[in-house]
Length: 182
Image (cartoon, rainbow, N blue to C red; front, side, top):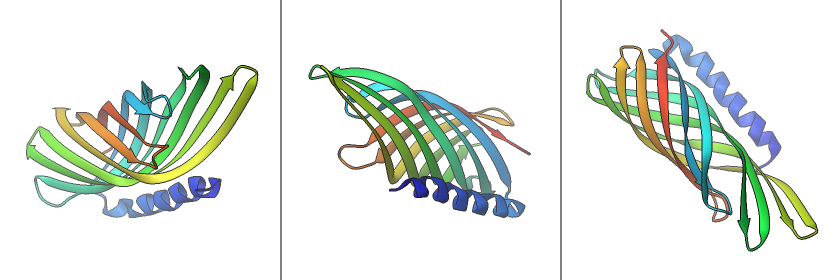
């Protein structure tokens, strides 16, 4: 995908999210940190994600919603076949969310959506240097469990998987906090 889709997709989705807020039962913000496996080296590295979303109550135990998030992973270095490789990535994602409260304080949730990712890579092999920036749009899914620490604070654990092509895919587990705005 092009750079244009990296910009246009989130703008269209966010305009829908914010125009729908008059019907929203529960706008929220979330922040997550975790470890991620991706790229050529298949190593685990630190990553972080922030998101904003809206959820609507279907009944006492079921909510559905939309979420838009931004994830980043700092530079990571590895060696493969005597080649030094450096990778970094930024991803913008949009999810549909289904949240099931099986107990007043515990919930299971699933997310399905698309992510547009900018991945920067560079490699050094002897005197040769190569640098590239790739833009990828792919389907991403997540499963998680949450616990309401307080009435307005949810601690959660989430596993994400990005269904990219065979050269580009990643998975990551994150611990996060979700806070309703109202």
